[in-house]
Image 1 (cartoon, one colour):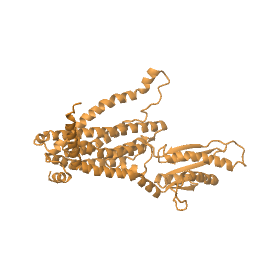
Image 2 (cartoon, helix red, strand yellow):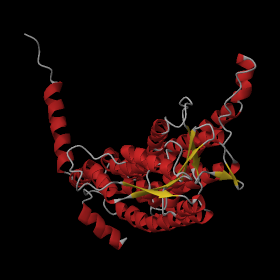
Image 3 (cartoon, one colour):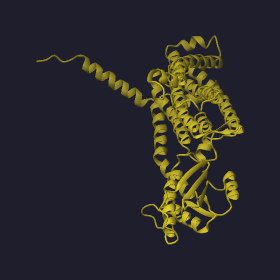
Image 4 (cartoon, helix red, strand yellow):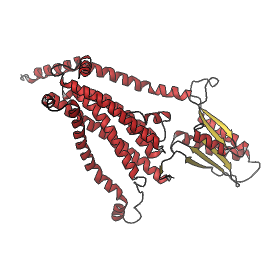
Length: 437
């Protein structure tokens, strides 16, 4: 008969105690409620987006010197853009797109600049019968609306060729479709060409991903450092030699500088390799392979903008992470509180990715000014669209104001964390201690 492992009962006791301590802790209940609310908001977010889309009517101006051609363009475009969802009554369904015929191109372009319409579709017929379609828009080159109008351009050409079949015998020619993005990024007052625009979009993804990773990782460094000091009771000794504000500032600056050193050590050689990628390819693979110029859209202004938003974003999140580290009674509890913060950063990251693709509409514009999303979203807008200088300054100003407000609250929470030794930091006790700090 095999001997019974004496460790199993002890392991079961430890596991049961750990489970009981976790579940009964106030942090478990509070984080569960928060995460439950966030999950429910994410679950109903598509419904809210569809509701807003249903309430919004998008106006497009169709300009043509030929009234019949303009009418055909509107008919084909509506058949693609205004498709009733399955199960809806077409009699009561409201069309999301309103296409308006116009013969004045200058007036339509003025309406586009003023925001009265989201796009201008110019449709003209050449002398040889070929249809030329130009779509002027403030969106990106790869938006869903642009892709639908690309299909519509072919349908306009087919319908126009069939309508004039008795008048001419020329063979069908595929219509041309050109997109002129009005709100594209510029450099020194000059709008970027397609190659530079594509390079900016690629670099924007790289910058946003790096910003998200560094904010989350180095923010957790700060929280872990504070929690470790509290659990080892080192904070009790340090608080007698420095004020909570000095300790919090030193923690954020010190760990932030260490993270920045690691970041520079990783990024510097990588950027050097990317900068000399063409020459390396030519030396290794031979002439003719040194094409692509991945950094053709990079400039000193973009690097400066990335550095500013990186520092502001890290400072804001580091202060929040530091107060979170003072809130827990042991480092293991950090994982419970770090998830909501990671979700907040994830929202900013995903919104920035949408902005890089030319979508998002009004939400992207609002999020670019709203901390803590603005470091991600405003950086994305700078990379791929034309952003007025006052908008960048306003976004930075709001970030600085948010950092100042969060610093006051974080300092109080950090100081309150010193007073909560030996007790589980319930929410009521912590708020009361923060008020006394």
